[in-house]
Amino acid sequence: MPLPLIHLNDLPPGGRNYSGELRTDIFELSGKFDPKFTPPFKFDLAVRVDDGDIIVQGWAETVFEMQCSRCTQQLPWRVRLDPYFTCEERDGAATLDLTAQLREDTLLALPGYPRCEESNVAPRPCSRDGGFAPESEYVPLDGEETVDPGQRDAWGALDNLPSADPKPKS
Image 1 (tube, helix red, strand yellow):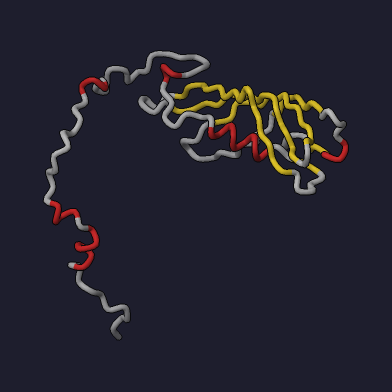
Image 2: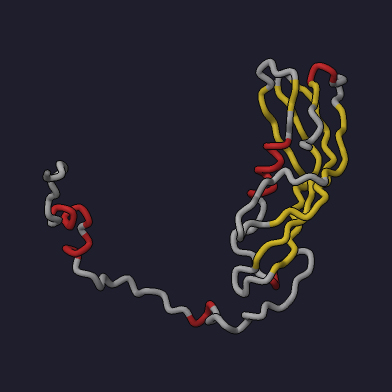
């Protein structure tokens, strides 16, 4: 079940609040390493129409189970969009479904490489802590060219490939 369908023609001049919880998975992530939605998805949103624009303000929140990018153990991660704001042109629309917009905004707020110690729900030491060199031990390149510039010509390398006859021989 998506978020409630908002009938824009029925909104009072000051707008209307929509709040609640969703227990159904609106994220539809099914990959082996994808974050796993942990119900509920909570929201409290005020929707109003202002000079042809649809204004949505409020907050939304949910928790995901994610995989640590170092040790691959599961860790909880809360996404809280607070404050949440979106503004779109009405373009004569009679209804508004915020499901897709909130889905995308929530997924974009997830970290790309979560780590156990950075969990905003239950941080813990990572079992792989100390298994990687500290950033202070990385030595940056000095900027000197170590590859012959002639070898970096990718298009020239393609010119050296043998040509293939596009027609198969019978």
